[in-house]
Every structure is written in structure tokens, then in C-alpha cells.
Image (cartoon, rainbow, N blue to C red):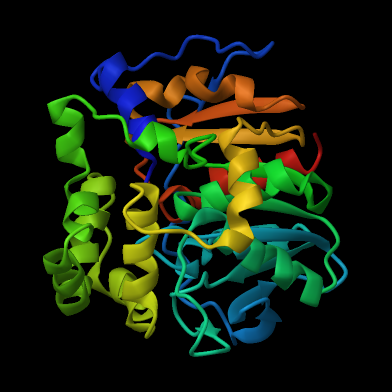
Length: 342
């Protein structure tokens, strides 16, 4: 789910008040044209095809691939509690335009597995980002367009900030949601704290046990809460829910949220990267940020505009929830294609 920093900005601005005013970029944010069905094409595809596997650092990563092998590479990264089926409609749209689309299962999801039982089941942001960089190395992809939402948005932003030479352009939903541990220690107003109930639940042993026992129903509740106007059916949810049966899923999810609240340590090997991010790393590669109703009043993008120092656009998808690529595949795919031209 989204960062505490973003939720704080949403609360402070008043979630009920939505501003479409111009941000500090030369052009105003671009809401979708009136009357356009942003959900057109959602649910059209129900298969990822035959999955592939590749070494990606400490994991053997499963991924789906679409489009020609010599096409311009695009990596699409999913969030929690979701999986690559978020891109089941986006990937064919991009493949039809000649892109080579790679959609990996992040560590702790689906068939992606750790290569050693001794590896720390670490969910911190730079560990996940380095898995993706390692996958690119194995697939001999020097540079790619990166897109994502939730954990995937954070991962794409981390790669763009720390390893810009590997990123042609980036399309992060909700903008710059890189975790800042110091900022995450600050208390929020009561209503905002209520929105993070699951993070505090995960901080307890009861929460870990509860998630392990009830992850199917737990994550379905998150889907409904994060996308209240997306009326997905059971078949759609169950296709993704299979990814939560990964043997390391609970460990990765619990560590991710405990680490973000400084309740679980990271690994020393990632500390230099985390320190660079904590110092306020910016993103200089071309970027198109996407906002949805999930972002509340913060969807005008003003709060993170300064983090993007290269060519930049911001687009607003009114009426869409958190799982943007699955709820609005055509606008998401268009943002990827347009980012390739910035």
C-alpha cells in the first residue's frame, strides 16, 4: 500500500477536497477527458501465458513476457497485495506497439523463490529494487522503461533514483513514495493513523499469525478498501490470490512493513543505498506520474513535483482506485508509451 508520508499529505489537504490546479511543472496536470471510459479493456485478458524463470541475485524470479524479443524493454512492477495479473491487459497493449514487456513476480510472490534457505527474508525497498536490477542483468537489458504502483511504484522510483543509467523513463503511480524511515517515525493525526491499522497489526505477533492464517480474506478486504468502485469478481481476485501462497510471502510482507516503521532491521549490505535515498535522492530520468482517487487531495501531484528533475508530466485518473493498471489498463499503457517518447 501507499506510504505514510503520502497519506499524511492527503489528510492534511483534506481528503474530500480534490484540486486539479497546475503543479509546479510548466504544464498543468492532465485529467482524463470528460466522458472517457477509463476502465475500458479491464478484464479482457485472463492469462499471463507461460511463465519464465531467471536468476535475479538472491532469488530465482518468475516473470511473464510479452512482445518481440528485440522490442524496447518495459518492466512492469506490481504492488501488495497484488501480483502480475495487474498487467494482464496492459502488457498485450504495449506488446502490440512493439515493446518487449517483462512482468516479474516480486520476492515473496508467486513462483519467485529464494535460492538459499539461509538468505534473510528481507522486504526493504532497496533489496526488492536490486532483485529487479539483477533480473535486468540476467536478461541483458541495459536500460528499460519502468512502471509500477504501490510496492512497484516505490521500486521503480528507487531504481530511477539510485541507478538512473538503467532507466530510460519511469511511470510511478502516486508519484514519489520512496520510504523515509525517519519521517515514518512521526505520529499522524488520529484519522490518518486509523488508515494504517494493518501496518500496526503486522507489527504484532498476533498480526503475523493472523495474516498467515487469513491472507486470502485479508487481502481481498484490502482490494475492496483501496479500490471501492472497482467491482472485481471472485475469479479475478483468485487468479492473483494464488501468488500469496508463496512460502516466503508472509515473511516478506511482515518484514517490509516492520522495517518501514523501524521495528525490524535492514541488512548492512543495503545501508549505503538507503542513506542516499534518505538524503533526498531525486529522479532525473523522464517521468510521467499517475494519480487516482486513492491519492485523495494529494492527487494534484504538488507534494512530490520537486522530486522529478527531468522531463515530466502528471496525469490524474478520476474514478480509479489503487490498482491503476488493472482498473484502467489503457491510460496506464498510454503513459508507458508516452514516457518512451519524452
